[in-house]
Image (tube, rainbow, N blue to C red; front, side, top):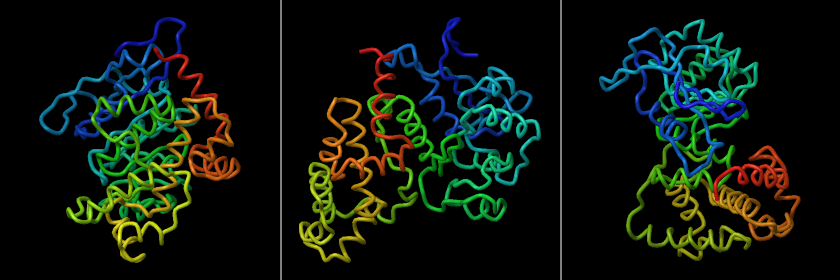
Length: 332
């Protein structure tokens, strides 16, 4: 196993599964975010280990051989378990893996799947009655094979607290960064994303497929400055009519082109930006919650609390206290 905590020190242990036919890219995402040494994050950063599902030697896509740190005994120790894809959506999930995951979940471990790994969670019965997602090619198969799962057809990832699922490969990176943000705060997630040269945060409910990911030059010259303007004026109450007028479009055309370019509606885009701004203010300042709500554009503390509980599961003041505790354990 990789470096473990000194005696008496309790650090969060992330365990990634490996199996014969391993999805190399998805596994690499888990290693890059949770397994890479990050001395700049201090001594409280994650521990990381790899658990084998099958007896070796294990082959990964691309002709790579994988040697694991251990087997299912690691799942009994893990705080977070990652299922990085699966060897096939029709491939059976071994009974001993099902039992190990069920035991870990009952014990309180978080379990995260990337792409087709969701089928492992579904086979273990961990998704019954929960929202979950996977790559757009597999959503119909997931819905038909496991009708008890509330399949989210076109989102990047779903956070159900102790069960998290992501869409296709790159969305797995978004989910991993989301988990870092949840565990260590926005500053830590931004630091990891910067090293990855990746966006620090994308909302999970953003569409998997953006119909026009690269707008033409004329359209980009109008929408890009508008996004900068909206981001710089979160405290203002923007109407669709005013935004459309600002870029010289009809309301209908503006809505269509905005969503085609960003993957979300203007209101959802603004909510995500306001939540991000509020979380940053809570982490980095002692500003009263009422003032944070004003600066982030929520208008009232009650509105901020409502959206914070809905998206983060905690009240703003609890979020601030937990992030301050975490920050105190990170190097200056």
